[in-house]
Length: 315
Image 1 (cartoon, helix red, strand yellow):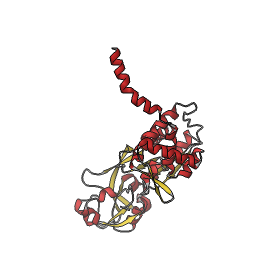
Image 2 (spheres, helix red, strand yellow):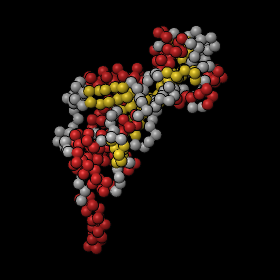
Image 3 (cartoon, helix red, strand yellow):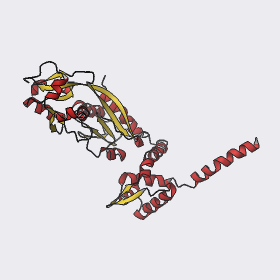
Image 4 (cartoon, helix red, strand yellow):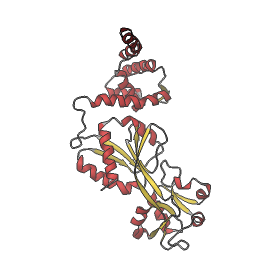
């Protein structure tokens, strides 16, 4: 039995010694540098001198046996290894932070800022409800909502410039998390006086008509999934910045557009348009709430996630 215990100790010892030799304060430096992408700004956020942060980065490179950061213009760019480490390191730091006195998140008194990006047209459907709901349960909290998603959104999520995204698409990289909130029924929006489309539409009609769509080059474009096939793509003759602009174009022309049923019905009287059921079974679009894995241990982040889910699924 003594020999067995001795053998276990011999297996554990190298790992224990290695961990004890690590200065865990270096991880807070790594986290700050990853977020700021700049040594000087990271030093300011940590209350350290720039040489001290540079020295810590040099030690981090030895610790992880990787360059971690390379110079890029006036800033620095993380290596692939640094990107891989960012999520786990941030979660580990948050686990420790959660156990410190006073670390509980209190919605009623918190003045924390959260940033949310909503794709068109979900800003129209959810924006006001989210703002009012948060104000009611966390009156001092600072919620910043952007009614657009730009092509740099992955970087913004990764470094917490934006903490949540609500849109009709998920992120492909495994570092992002997504949760389905609800499904939107899709219809074909046409002018009420459209000369060729009545109360139903066939696949032949869909290909024969000219389509208006939300810019297909924009990240998270509502319209993009419907125009992946070349025949449908050729039908797109007008691309707009948002779905309301698309419907406005439809109302004044003979163009058609695929849109959520709730939005078309909401604008029926104002724009003189109508909702025509789509043929086939592919007539739903799923709305997703997305965030970066590095935030999952943050209690404030967890609370806000539950609030957004509740606001997106009112009883």
